[in-house]
Image 1 (spheres, rainbow, N blue to C red):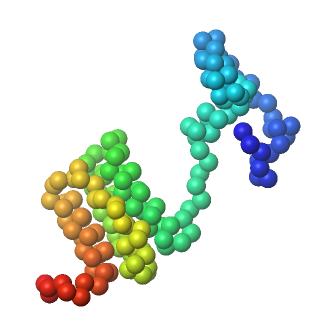
Image 2: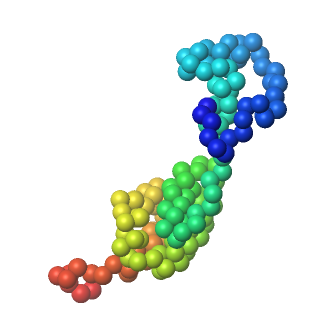
Amino acid sequence: MSQDDSSPLTRDIAPFGVRMPPDLKERVAAAAKASNRSMNAEIVATLEEKYPAPRPPPSTDEDRLRFLRDMVDTIDSDRTKTHEQRLSHLRALCGLIHEISDRLPAETVDAIMDGWIQPPEFGDENFVQFAIYNTAVLKARRPPPPDAPEE
């Protein structure tokens, strides 16, 4: 683990004893050796990976829009929630995406959402309405191409 200015010095960290079964200790020792680390460093690295530090909240509208876009994907893949629960969360996110998109220039919204694909799994009418609404929000922010036929 590398030391940076925000990390406490090793001598300032209180020891924390852990009882573990011998076979687990052997596996940790083998992983530590393979990673060229001490067992303590291996355990800390594993815990850091499993329990990452919380990210600071997004501070700009651009970061908020990226965060919400990513949340849609996270909610879509959350199988601990029912379809109805996920759909409810997605509708709420759509409203927030719309609100934030209104405050940003169309080019910024396009750049952030470029290449992002709506979750395909929701095939019922409610999700189609969500997708149409979300697409309409973004589409309305884009000027039509000069040669586009009027709708």
